[in-house]
Amino acid sequence: MSRTPLFQGGCLLEVAEVARALTFDFWNTLYRMPDGIRQRRARVLGQLLADAGQPRSAEAVEAALEGAWREAWLMQRVHGMDITPRGHVEHIKKSLGVRVDAELDERLYRAYAYELLEVPPPLNHGACEVLETLAGRYVLAVVCNTGASPGVVLRRIMEADGLLAHFRATVFSDEVTWAKPNTRIFRHALGLLGVSEGDAVHVGDDSLTDVIGAKLAGMRAVWLQPEAGWPVPECDWHIRALPELLDIF
Image (cartoon, rainbow, N blue to C red; front, side, top):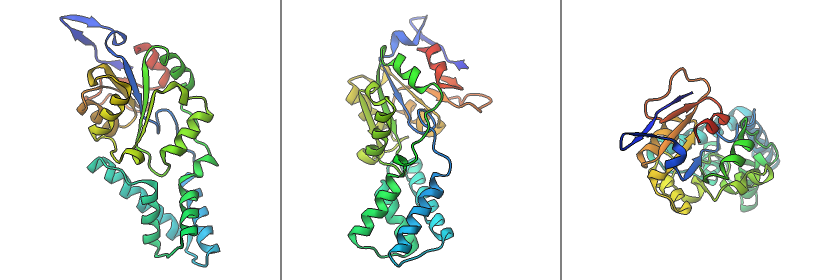
């Protein structure tokens, strides 16, 4: 693990002395994506369309899902704005050229956006123990680019795993329209916590959305990346596993 020391008035400071809040990314930081979830979504949506008399090939449905995900991914990273899960479904319907009534539209959305409740994502190693410890020392928040699953679903998953109670605020891009690396989503979370940018540290795996986004917002950043041979220069600390946070904080 590499760390960047903090200095104030010529004196080396421990982070615990200068930080009041920690914010956490969700995907690949607290949770890992379940294997095969996109293929599972494609199968369910394909079956719903076939049952409604509008069959499409498995390859076409999978390509539509891939296109929706890529459009949303680029919107977040390039423009710092979110395309909600309903926006994903609109893209999928347009790509497949299907016309649906209100009932089928809602069934498609539920199948797409709520699938994680059927196949919950696994927790990242050490997440429960680390959060339980840090919640006694700092105020915590989640700052998440949601993707296919809305914040209402992700909160239910966190609650089922006993994590939700550790967080004073949970900020999901589909609910606020901004997405990391947009600084507005970070500052919105800090406003909910009642702390300034200089008193907060963000933890995440993505060098652009988590590290550079947080730094542009005036925060410090911990980069969680097990495979990296060296840290990105913008991060303040590089860790390879969540339990290493307890060596810093």
